[in-house]
Image 1 (cartoon, helix red, strand yellow):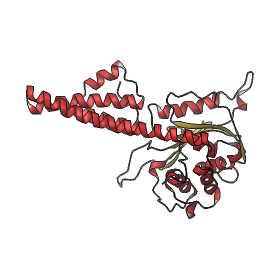
Image 2 (cartoon, rainbow, N blue to C red; image 1 turned 45 degrees about the vertical axis):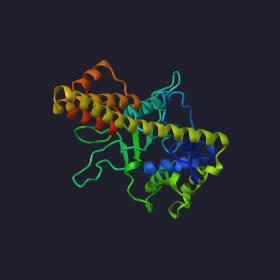
Image 3 (cartoon, one colour; image 1 turned 120 degrees about the horizontal axis):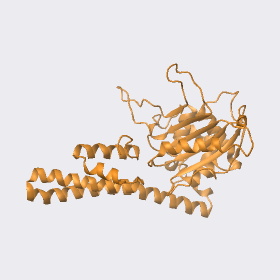
Image 4 (cartoon, rainbow, N blue to C red; image 1 turned 30 degrees about the vertical axis):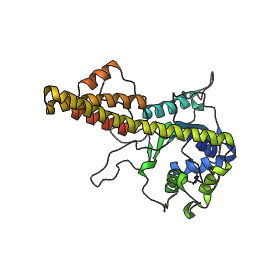
Length: 324
C-alpha cells in the first residue's frame, strides 16, 4: 500500500513544508516550540535569506534553511534537518552558524548591526549517547547550547547559540502531550501514518501533514522524493553490507591462516584483517578520509581496539578525536 504522507525529514519535503513563504507560519511554530520562546520573544514574521554563504556538501544528506526573524531582537536562524551523521557533523553546524553571523555586515557597516544567530538542528540520529545510572540519556531530546564562564557559570557571549532535536530520543509514543513531543512525533511517524491522528488533527501539525500528503506532490516533487528515499536506503544498506563483508572476510582469512600457523592464532589474525577491511569500507561509505596516519593507526589495533573503533564510527559517524 502506498504511504499516505511523505517523509518530512527528506530534503524536498522538509523544504516544501518549512521552506516556502506560503507556509512560513509552520516554520515560525516550529522555531517557537523548539526554542520555547515566551510571549515577549515569540517570532511574529520571518524572511528567507540566501544560502550562498553556506558551504556546498558533497553527497549532501541534509536540508538547510536560512531565515531572519522579526522579533524584539531581529534574530537570525539557520535551520537544518540531517538524516544521517557524517564526519565533522558538529563542526559543520558550528561553521554554518558562525558563517551566518559573520556575513551579515556589508562594506563599512559597524558591528552593532550584527544580529544574533541561532542554529536549529533536527537530527534523525543520536548526537550525545551518554546515559546516567538509570539508563536515561544525560542530554535530553531537545537541548540548547550557549557559552558560560568556566568558573562562575555565568552566561555570556550569546551572539551565537545552538538548539538540537535528536529524534531517536523521542519516548512519548503515539500519545504526545507537549508541543515539542508533537513535532517529534510528526517527524518520526508521518511516513507510516494511514490517517491524521487525533493528537495532530489541529494546529500546525495538521497543516504540515496536508502539505506532506503524497497526493499533493507534483510529478517533479514525487520523483525527487523517490530519488532521495532510494539514496537513503542505499546508504544504510551500504553500512550493513560493510559489516557483513568484514565478518565474511574475517572468517575466510581466519580459516586459511589457521591452517598455516594454528587455528587460534590464525583466526585472530584473519579476523583482525577482516575487521580492518570492513572498517575501511565503512569509512568510505561514511565519507571519512583515511589518511596515512589513520591507516597506520588502524594497522596497529588488535581485535579489541578494532571493535572499539567500529563502535565509535557507527555511533558518531566520525573518526575519534583522540586518534590521529
